[in-house]
Length: 531
Image (tube, rainbow, N blue to C red):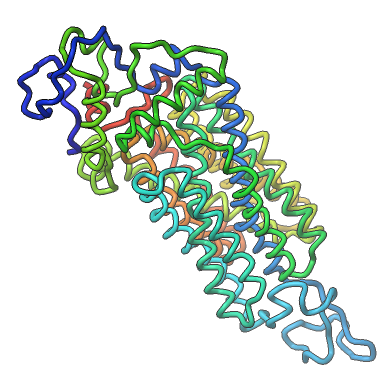
C-alpha cells in the first residue's frame, strides 16, 4: 500500500515521521481540499481554461484516427482491368496472368497492388492489420505506465506523437512487405498511447459533474479524424504519399499545439509536486474569472479534512517537502490494482467489456470493405454516422448513469446484430442486414465511447492510466480478433457480434455506479469513500 503523509496526526508535534525543522511559527487555519473540491468551490468545473485545454488535447484523437484507419486506404484492393488485346473479360483475378490485367491507378495505389498481395498472399493484408493492433496493445500498456510515473501525461503525449511522425514517414519508404509490417508494428506501439494519454490529460482538470459529458465528447475528434482522413486519402491516392500526408500532422501538433497544453494537476499532486499543482490551479481559477483564496492547500483525497493546521505549529513548506521526498510512494502499478479487493474485480470486468466492445466495433467497421460502394464516401459516412451515438450517450450519461447506459448500449447493439444474423444476404434482405449493421455499430460506438469515462472513474489517480492501459490492451486484442471473425462469412460474424453485445451487457451489471462520485486519488481515498 502506498505510503501517504500522516495528515490525521498533523497537529502532533512529536510525530517521528516529520523532521525537527517542521516545528515552526503558528500558522493560520489552512483548508486542505482535493482537486475535485477545489474545482467546484474556487476554480470552476468547466470554464474557459478547461474548454481550451480540452479542445487542444483532444485534437490528438484525430491523429490516432489517421494512423489507425489509414490501412483502409493504403491496404485496399484496387480495381483492375484487362490489358488491351488480352482475353480476360469476366475472368477470375487469381486465374489470370499478371500480363493480362493491370491495376487501375497503377501499382503504387496501394500495398496490395504494389506487392501483389492477392490470392494466396491475401492473408498478408490481414496479418499486417493484426500486427498493428498488437503494437497498439503493447504501447497502451507501456505508455499507460509511463504517463502515471516518470513521463507524465503531457510528456507521454509528446513522445508518442514524435514516434508516430517518425514511424509513419518511414513506413512510406518501406522497400518490401516485411519492412512494412515491422514499421506498422512500431507505429501501432506509439499509436496505442495517443488516445489513452490524451483522454486522461483532457479530462483530469475538469470537475466531477462536467467530466462525464466532456469525456464522451473526445470521440467526436476520433470520428472527425476518420472523416478528414477520407478527404486526405482522396487527394493522395498513392499509398506512400498517403502515409507521409497522414503523419506530418503529428509533427505539426507537437510544435503548434502542445506548447499551449498544461500537465495534469492530478499528476503533479501524486508526484509530490504540490507547488506546481497549486500554481496550475491558481491559473485555472484566474482564467475562469475566479479567485483561489489564501489559506487553501491542495491535497490528496485521503489527506483532506475540513480544517487542518489549526494551531499545530507546522509550516506548510515542510509538509510539501515531505510529499516531495516521498513522491515515489504515491505511484501505483497494475499489480496494486489486482492486489486490491475493490479494484481487482473492477479491472477484470472492465477488461472483458473493452474486449467484447472492440470485437463488435472493429468487426462491424471492417464489413464496410465488403460493400460495393465508393470507399472514400463510405468511410466518411460511417464516421459521421457514429457521431449521433456519441451525442445521445453524452446527453443520457448524467441522467441515467454509467452502468445502465453501458448495459443498454451493449444490448441494443447485440439485438440488432442478432437480427442481422437471422436474415439472408439475398435481395431486399441485403438492405435489412446493412441497416442492422449500422444500428449495431451505432449502439457499440456509444458503448466504446462511454467505457473510457466509466473506466477512468472506477480507479484512483495513482493507477488510473495503468488501468486504462490494461483495458486498452484488451480492446486491442479484440481488434486483432475482429478480422478473423469477419472472414467467417455468412451469418456467423453477426452471430458472434450479437453474443459479444449480450454477454457484455450481463457483465456490466456487476460494476458499481460512478455518477457524481468523487474521482479518487489514492486507494486509501477510494476505500474511505466506500466505507
